[in-house]
Length: 115
Length: 112
Image 1 (cartoon, rainbow over the protein chains, first blue to last red):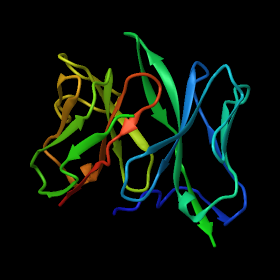
Image 2 (cartoon, helix red, strand yellow; image 1 turned 120 degrees about the horizontal axis):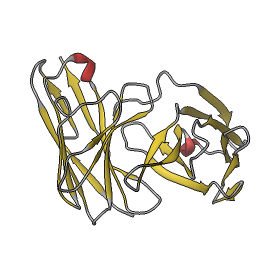
Image 3 (cartoon, chains in turn yellow, green; image 1 turned 60 degrees about the vertical axis):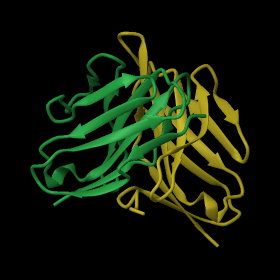
Image 4 (cartoon, each protein chain N blue to C red; image 1 turned 120 degrees about the vertical axis):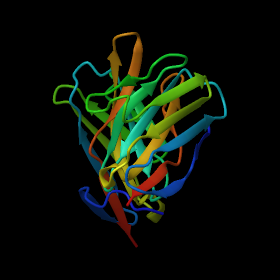
């Protein structure tokens, strides 16, 4: 499949280490944030989300932290595995007129896990 | 969760031609969106596909270049018109009802 993330910043980690992927968002009115994982040749897959009234949410091996003061989001992956190698995107939910919402994506980070 | 299917999955097109991408969702979704992902880059929202009415386009995208249809709650099409090599990209359909946004696998277009 076609590669994604060729020109994106890369985080290289050893298998078993913890990974931290960071994201800055732009709109202080955003009320909902999502992390997506995109493997080569595939569409983005949902990992975890967090509402703006929270500062931390945990899933299976993943934790998302939200700092609204500095408009910063991070994704922590515990005990990183080779299957975690992918490009990771944060997305912020923005409400627009007419009562609907849209997701705007951040720049993305490529995670490379080495055995 | 919803399953989103796109056709074609990939195509090679000649400059000046147009191509229509189809998106089918296996369940009704409130909202459908089309994104573009240029090589090595993030996803850029093209437009929101509105059922039974004209799509809502983002800045930098226009209806003449990217006409969109959404005749019902499970189907949408995106046409890339009068293609140039700069339109070579992955085009992704997505749908959501509340919260999570689901994506198709994308349609990878190469324009020669």
